[in-house]
Length: 550
Image (cartoon, rainbow, N blue to C red; front, top):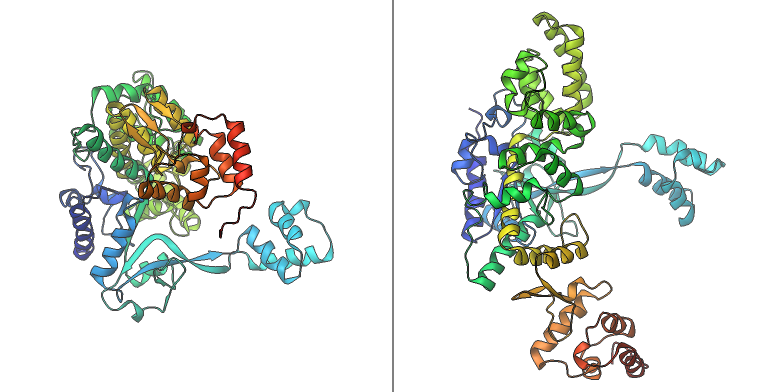
């Protein structure tokens, strides 16, 4: 009825190509509520198993077309983009644009420039609150004109992930621009896109998937074992992985490695996938700030020591102990407790996902909610408390399918951490992502039984490598060593053999004294057998007349 077939088929076509290339993807967002997208392989979670709410994805009252958010590894995203532009034609594909508005800092900088203020003063204006600004004539004028500029468009930019595919040539709707990124962008944003009725595809990338991919490849290389990590029977309910979860031993694992998250897993004694799905959602600011997170933990640990707020809450939110954890829960309560229409429920949903100008619409819905509750015979106090709970979620809560998709990926990385810890930690270091600094992951690798070897110009590659239990840190982890030189050291060694001495190294690599000192300090020339102070003197003598062009 809603003419949605083409959108499904194009998404499926992109996924089919991705699978043929052996890439791993995660389909998330409300699309995972649909059994069709599960059967087509667009998403990985079964909506029946988790009792996902189809109306959150699609209903006849929904004004805007829903979209699939699909994540790839950060290393594969460009290949997917190339495929889309080739397959559907450069005349029909473009990135969605955005209009960057004038905000606090940019207003003071731009208006201040017009009045000829020097950089130091512009920095002062942009960094300090208005009360602390000098009150001279010029600054007062900057304030005066600045207030007029607020919320006006400042510059054009591109949407981080939204790609538009149109049936007619895209230039029938808009002129295109070519930003430095090299992809054409349209001259309007996603709200206009929806009004025109163009389809938007969200092609995203993240480092968590890169880590999982790299780990699987490394396991094959080092142990000769093929792990089918997409097989969810393997990576969803695993005794030892559940033990790690319950004690929060999850450093390096996607989405569940921050101190707050690990603390939450411990307090929930989270030992299975379903609780992990809930945990992914209650860590969000809205739930945490409203006190619901504390209440959820208490009810989870003492299921016999609380009363349900109302029989409607007991009937529809039994799985989450009568607490609204997901956006779907909020919609259910609005519908069954407040008697709101599905159309109003959809406005609530949009307000909660932070889309559209939500505040005015929310006020409208609030009035309808209170009137409707009055008719249903709920007391004023009861209605106010129910609405307070709804409001605390607006803008922050996750859609359940989103949480479930994240939880699958978290569990996959946890499974690899449990059974292949060294391969996993090496991949985390190489993907340079995660909550912590690299040294935390190096320490974690050490705790998992790895022997850490500091970088050496003769044994290290650009990336960190694993040989047996020895982890050879890559040259890329060194701060202050240019990427180009790091690659050059490895390439020169592969072409012309190992470096025989410091002098040999300096003759073969165009390198300055500061960089050589970094390498000496961290022991990258320990194969020479000379102490560091001797190497430093030698380097200074050799490089006294250094010029890169020589």
